[in-house]
Image 1 (cartoon, rainbow, N blue to C red):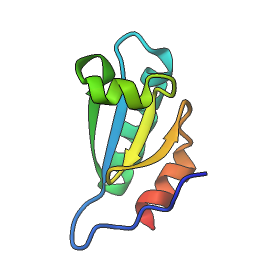
Image 2: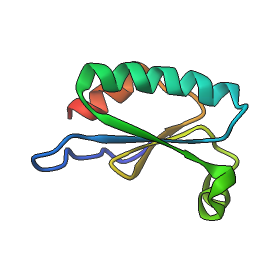
Image 3: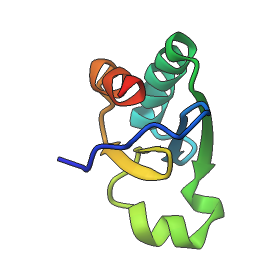
Image 4: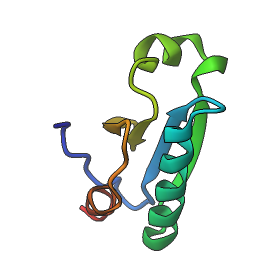
Length: 89
């Protein structure tokens, strides 16, 4: 589906959740991301498309969108196993 993200040299992986308040899919994605990042030691952050016009233009039809190290990993539904494999690659 999307390109494989390579591990950053000497550092932890970063997962970015792009979503918006009141989005039930975003809430579900947040829980999966929180769990997988706790297991793998990756850090995660969240960005609100309502606060960033560029993100809104790029992703408004796909939220929630998950980036791994700045590259799109998935959208709509986050699969814990797939995210875990991407972070361990």
